[in-house]
Image (cartoon, rainbow, N blue to C red; front, side, top):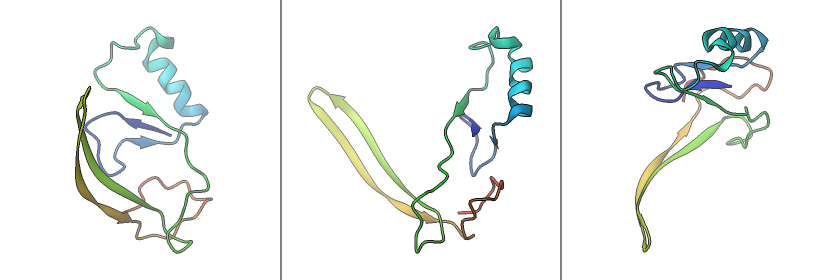
Length: 101
């Protein structure tokens, strides 16, 4: 799965990485010659095909916030976040990337 590294929210800019998208990236980045030259960053991540599900049917995630102010000495600020639960049941065969949380 490929997504924009910044400025994208709620699955905007998420693409499944297939042969067609790979060819498009190769052309857009001139076979790697434009790496680091493009203003928009991309993040590649492996899709988790068997995620932990809430009640064995809905995907979920935790959003918590931490700020590492210093590592020597270690100073970390923590702020409670929230739990997001998908409104749709998880279907491992679906190619839909815009599942609403």
